[in-house]
Length: 155
Image (cartoon, rainbow, N blue to C red; front, side, top):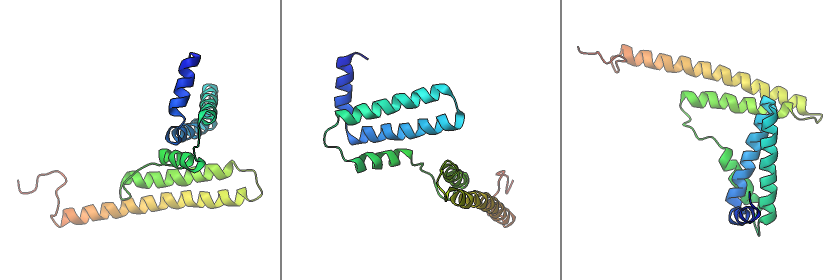
């Protein structure tokens, strides 16, 4: 990037929302790099960190909490809580917590990781119970004539 353009870009974007989204991007890139172990992803993470530091240096009067709030909002995954996808996302979130605790090196990390793994296993059990419940609900409705999955009732 030419120096003039780079300085103008940094000045224009050195605001909490953009810096927060950049921070969220760093988290994603670091997670990808740690999980996939691909060298190019390390470079992408390094570039994102450099951009973040440059933005912070160019900023004036930003609040760290605003940056963090934006990053958290950017990383959040929206979903309907009563859907099949939500069941899988709850398991994925529990698994992410497990991976985070496994990466810790303090004396209590093993205990926290064990607890988090129990949460993952519980998530699988709950998902299977919900599948069975939904299946029973559907079968009861179908048997009672409330719904017809093939659309052929009355023909």
